[in-house]
Structures are given as C-alpha cells and as structure tokens.
Length: 239
Image 1: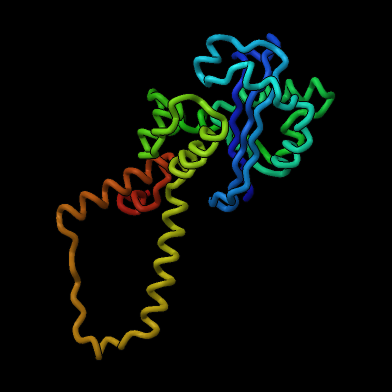
Image 2: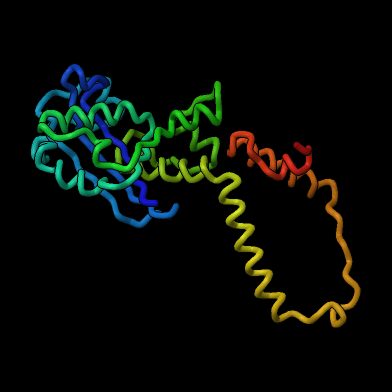
C-alpha cells in the first residue's frame, strides 16, 4: 500500500477567514517502509501571517516573498499524492486548507485524487482516551526522538508522524508477520539440523517468573494496540 504522510503550516487557524498555506510537505511510504521520496515547498500566501501562527512555526513573510504561489505547485503536489492514502494528524485542519486552495483554482477536492484519508489524531484518541495525543505526547509515549522539533515544520512533522504511525499500528498484525518470519527461519535451520536420535533426549525449559511477567506485558501492549483483539489472550481466557 502506498501512503503519504502529510503536514502543512499556515498563516492562521481558519481557512474560512482567508488564511493560506505557507508550507506543505509529504513523505512517501510503501508497504510500511519509507521510500525516500518526498514533496516539500514553501509558499507565498500573498497575505500577512498572524502573530500566533508565527510563534508556532517561525516562518515570516519576508522569507516567503520569493516563494511560489500554491497555484504554481498545485499540479505537482496532486501528482505526488495521487492514488495514495493520506496520513495526517488532525486531518480536518490540513484538508480544509488544502481544499480551500484547490477551490480557488476551480479544482476538485483532495479526496477525489487520493485513496482515502487517515486521521492519526482520531486514531490516537481511540487508542489512548483521556490522554494528550499531540505529536510531542505521542513521541514521548512511543519513545520516538523529537529533539529537533523546537518549532513546527511541515517536513519534520511529516517524518515524525510516519514514525508515530508505525508505532501506533505495530500491533498483533506485525507480530504475526514477525512470527511467520521466525518460523520460516526455524524451518530452514531444522532442514540442516541432525535428527532427534543424533541430538539425544529433548529437554523442556519452562519460563521463570521474570519471563512470564515480560510475556504478559507484551500481550497487554498487543491488546491495547489491537483494540482488544489479542488472540493470545483469548486463547488463555477462552471464548
């Protein structure tokens, strides 16, 4: 599956009040691996930047004077996201601004070009109800380095979001894949290993208390990431 992790910076909070996009960035992922392909542009919004927005991203109007307008990069941007699932943190905000920019050019909304939109803020709230779920909080929760994020920046935030998304979705499905790979490796090893008679009597080593506790901790993490669908716990407790 092709996915694009997307982020924007803007002149203010409300596109309905005429605020515009000043930075847009996307990074591509294919089958859960970043490809290195990215889209990143600064844009001249042709209007002033609110002081509140400037304090968040630090991008001033003077820096943007020689940058292209959205109309100049629109087709290139649409080609980059075409056919991909868009992964966005607080998607309604970015999609609202992007669709407003497209509407100014009499172009169709973004969802007619891409293959679905995933809001990771909504996903995080479902996984961690009642907790902070902004990017900084999620980085801390999942052990992701965000030390370079002193200000908001579209490209850096898109890259961080990709890491957060992988951590949030690394549940039962990815563990099964890992187990399948391990089983394949064991099969290859056993094909060249001596038979039972050559190895002598097989010994069964039982888990100690520490290993049992670690196992239960892993199952609890899988249970949370899979929203209560951990098959191993079901097998233990029964239907």
